Length: 473
Ligand code: 5GP
Ligand code: MG
Image 1 (cartoon, rainbow, N blue to C red):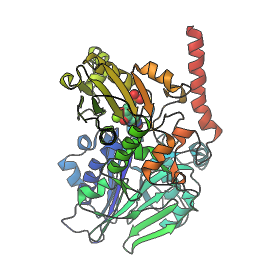
Image 2 (image 1 turned 135 degrees about the vertical axis):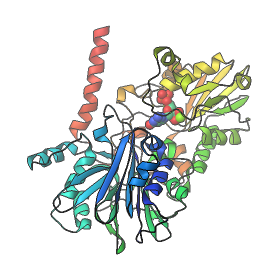
Image 3 (image 1 turned 120 degrees about the vertical axis):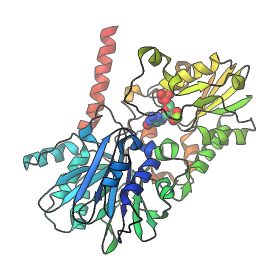
Image 4 (image 1 turned 180 degrees about the vertical axis):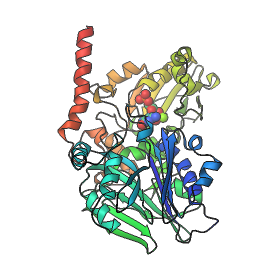
């Protein structure tokens, strides 16, 4: 995953501090990645980057932002995927080559990194990180064409998988999107400045307006001559990640022209129609389950209430809770309101269940607080297949719904009843046709080819787990 942002200010207006605007853009995109944050700026002559582990507000302060002077900038907030929490994997990554310097922020995941890394190594290119992002930056920085558009377009044809990226050179900002459009990227305007962002909420925060979404396979380069759009690679499909609609993007963002809060409300309404239940109160698992819970309550006529309170400041901090706190686990994040739950039949609505570990604890907490029945309603279908495009959805054997019936999942979670939104119901709620989405996590059908080594990497873990389980028996 990740959040990306970019801005090009043709005039270098003194009251338009691009690093500060990028900071605020990233601040609005914080939900897309909490592991590390970074900003790169250029004044037209030199690229300067600053990045570190932590939240956007932990990485940057007033003196650091003031040191980043320029007319153009890009920024990145990184989402943690398995194991690679390290400074060298923070972004933007910077690659210097004789022809140009490139800073790159990437949202997504490449599926042919291994082959490209081997090729770069063969050409004696030194790679410092283990990330696929550095590979993209190296290919573009070292590209023989002096024209940035050509260098990016050519590289777009060589990399595979999911990418929505922002790029900065000494004198240009660029954005580009993979031919399946798996990850979102939108172009905005702030007076005469051009802005790129993963989501529209990042445009709202700085007062920019939406121009349009970048199309699958499209590239935009913004420099002194203004923006130039190019359909760099043939669009293969328009397969926006459906998990952006379900969970990932902020509810106040718009995608494909639709407000996600409204779409999620429709998912909840649809869920109430598909899976009604007699109950006293509908409560959300905040915050991600809230719009769907509102929809469920509206359609069912059961009153909406709050039964769980979320600590808003739980991010990925570097201070691990001690053992005692860890055992209390989910209470760091959620607490119950017994007065809302005691003696009640409760419908609890959440947007998704991945591993089921949080949900199981929540169900238990609701019963302990005095709920007589806990009816779990999930506003997406069961997640049964891993994501190869940047969502940290675990190995298949960790997905609670993979290889289990809904009744078996219900039993594991300890709920009175469990129902998921149907795939058709989900699709209807989006008001878009199914061919506009990647739904691989729900169906196992991937829009791009997944090379054997990637599948095998996941399978290897599965085999290991199976072997360990067998040994333990
Ligand atoms: P589980 O019961 O699977 O452990 O957790 C379910 C919860 O995780 C849901 O509330 C859902 O909103 C949330 N969730 C779904 N996907 C992600 C993700 O990629 N990252 C994080 N941090 N939470 C997620
Ligand atoms: Mg949630």
